[in-house]
Each structure stands twice: as structure tokens, then as C-alpha cells.
Length: 566
Image (tube, rainbow, N blue to C red; front, side, top):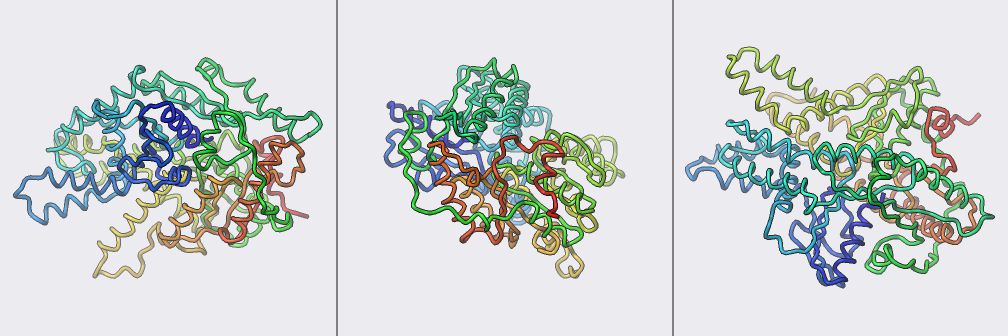
């Protein structure tokens, strides 16, 4: 949608106006360092060439380690090495990482002495951000009624300090004099629908001071170019049909630009006069090298079963690609389970129908959390007294339980691929990497528990993800600098976990449209560069989905993308 570009451009504008500004990324897959040309850390870092502007990245791993150390420091001085080691082990899971990141976020919200005129949070994609913004309320309620502590927060001695901080964070978020939430969208039907849902969910959390930015608004410069006219008409129609709840918000529109928003000059120009596009010297890749999505489905169908995980940055079209791949496999006579780990969950609205051989659902955090609680109470709570069961149930009401429950549901879905095809539409990059971290932590825990007892028959979810005969990772990107960079970073992270991506899909390519519109032509030159970068070094196999005058929504439109060539 352009959240990072716009938040950075606004921060830079205020700094240029003489304000002191702190720009904070809460996205585990942040690319602020590339955009600003400065190495990020979990401490404010001044931006060269922009006096008054500092940036900070809430790094989940660094935040988790700092959090663990604070908890250990709060323990009594006579705590034994074994007790300290036990607490550190309790604080090694993915849900502690989330709490630590949230703790950093809360400290910035609640710090009355923060020496900046403005603090701008460049947030993670929708589902993960709604989870983050809901945590102050969830934890405040949990801590107010809990005398036992929670394993991911550490011993009870530090909980009251946390309770005060979380309440201050909640008050700051809900105070319209202090906080404004800016919804960033595109002139696109599905993007506007998501923004409308987000608007409602934010209001339920008490965040009523909202503003809307529509990014990438395009106007054709000539009425003789059919592609440009169709591109403009799609945007106009989407804005005309904008949900009333969005229309009621204060609104700004930012034009589609011919340049990538990397570097201070481009970021300064994003909200000002348009930069002159510099035509890249690289020529467009030969179109015959760009394989269609139907060819990818043919390759995936050879195995007979397996897990297909569709991954990438928010807004690049993962749900469209996942739904199309699932339909393509059904067309080829396969039984398919299509699911999603994305809290925003768009599968139903993308498919708009049902088809024989295709099971569609989602990993619903609320449902999975209750299922997990019921299971624990039935097993571990079976022999306990009523008082002990009450204490156990109270602890399970911790917001961290949701993370554990979602991981168990993810593991269950992964195991299904032993006999059928499972296509998983994952959450945007940062949230998915936290799920990968949980998978790795579980793997290490199982190895420790079975050490010395034989683990030859152990098969963990991580081992399934690492097996190229079981799992195929599909990375989805747009042919633009930032999405390609983010897909590369994701690929590097996966490889460090010994998970090798199978292929890349470049979505919404306009290279084959032959448009003559000057602005679109300038963007095509940049697209050619990015496609060459992907094909000549990043991806082992590259498949392309062209830009379409009608978005591929519904069973028929998606089916055409993957129809088997006769």
C-alpha cells in the first residue's frame, strides 16, 4: 500500500520544517534502512541529510534479549543459576518475542519525556498491527486480575510495573489529542474493503481519531491509450464505490509516481512536485522467459500431494496467487485444502464461491485459542483441584496463549500435506517469520527432550518445511524496488533456516501491455530492471502474472489464470 514510503515522507517533511521527529518501524520486515540509506538499530539513529529526523527499528530478537535480561535483573539476588536458566528458557519462545516487541512499542507510547515533537510509527501489515494495538487492552485486563504471573512475562515481581506501562500505552492510543491513526490504501476495491474493516476494528479498540490516505492515484495523460484509460477507470470506480465509513474520514490522495521511493530526493518528492523520471539503461527481459502461472501449477501437480506456502510482503497479491494455485490443482484432479495464517483473512472474498475438491478455511486465532485451552484443561487439568484448575485457566487467558494456539493449528495443517495438497496463504512477511521462529523453537525443544532417548523417528514441522519433497515455498512480489528487496530479505531468512524457496511469482506486471502513457512507460522501465534482477540471480524459477484490466476475483477469473494449456 505504501505505508513505509508515506510515513517516511511525512517524517522527512516535518524534519525539513524544523521539527524533531522519531520514525519507528514496528514491522519485523522493515526496509527503512534501504529507503534512507542508514543502518537501523533499536536505538534512535540520526538520518544523514535530514537534520531533526531519527529512525528506530523495533527489532524482535534484540527486544526479546533485552526483555529477558530485565526480567532476570528483577529476580532476587539469591536466585540460583538453575532458577535463572529456567526463567530464560521460559522466555525463549515466539510469544515472548511478541511481548518484548510490544513492550518496546508501549514504552514509546507511554514515555511522557520523549524528546521529539512527533513520533511516527510505520506499522506492520494490517493483521499483525491490529494484534499489536489490541495487546495493551488485553494485557491490562489480564494483569489487573492475575496474581500468579505468566510464563512469557516472567516472575510476578515485575508484572505491576508492566501493568502501569500497558495502561499508559492504552491511554495514549485512545487519546485523540495525542494519537492519530492513518489508514493507507490504494484505489483498489479489495484494498479499500480491508481499510474499511480495519477502520471498524480500530474503533472497537477505542481508536477513533483516524485519517485516510489513498496512495497511487492515477490519471491518464492521453485518452488514446487503452491500457492507461483502463488503469484509471479501475481506480475511479473503486473510489466512487468507497465504503461510507471511509468516505466520512478526513482524506488525502497521493498521485502515482514514476519513480521508486528510495533515497531522500525521491521521498521528498513523493508528497511534492513529481520528479523527472530517469529512464534505466537496462532493457526489458525477453517475454518468452516469463513463464505463466499455469506452468507453475503443472510443476506443482507432479508430486501428488504436499505443502505449498505462499509468502511475501503485505499487498503484493499472496492471496490471489494462493487461491489461483489451489484452483489450478483442483482443475488437474487434485484434492486441495486452502487455508490462511493471515489475521486479515481474504480468501473467501477472493474466491467468491465454492468448488468440488477444494476445502477452504482459515486458522482463526479466537477459535484455535479456545480449542487449545479446552485441550489443556482436559489433559493437564484433569487431576487438579477446583482451585488449581481455576489458577490454570486464569493463566491460559494470557494473550500469549493465542500465539501458542496458532502455532499448534499451523502444525496440524502442515501435517495434512502427507496425503493431500495444502496451499497456505501466509500472513505478511514479518508475522510469518515470527511463526517460523516458533516452528524453530519447537524443533529445538523436541530435540532437547529426546536427547539420549533416540530421535530417529522424530518429524517436526520445521523438518517438513525443510524437505523440498514435502514443501514448496512460493515468494510473491511486485516488479518494484521495495517489494523485490523485501522478497530477497525473506528468501535470505528462509535459507538461514535451511528452507529453500521453490519459485518467485511477479504479480501485476505491465511489461506486456504496450502502454504509451509517459508515466506508465517510466514505471515500466523500472519494472524491467527489477524483473531482470529477479531472473538473473534471485529466483531459481520465475513466473509472471500480468496486470489485468479486471482484477482476478472469483472462481472463473482465477481459474483462467491457471487453466491448463491444451
